[in-house]
Image 1: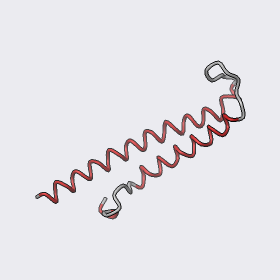
Image 2: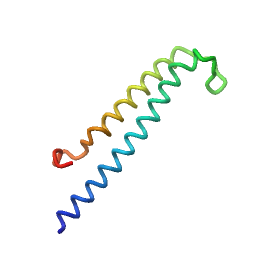
Image 3: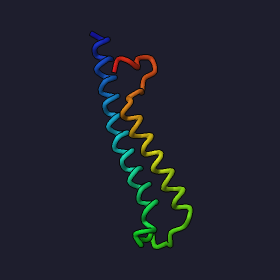
Length: 85
């Protein structure tokens, strides 16, 4: 009975973390794409002219967003029970 409760609780935690990783991954990826292309669209960010650091920030945000999406897909949050979920 207690084991079943713990198993269901872990499944809920994994589901919640997975959804959070997907959502945050999409947000960071969109931010990265924005920083990579806003110079070409003629937009400004907070009233400043685009600089070369924006490409670095865009690549960093995009790679972090992709990593978060991957982590949400793998759902590998608990090291002791990897194959159960």
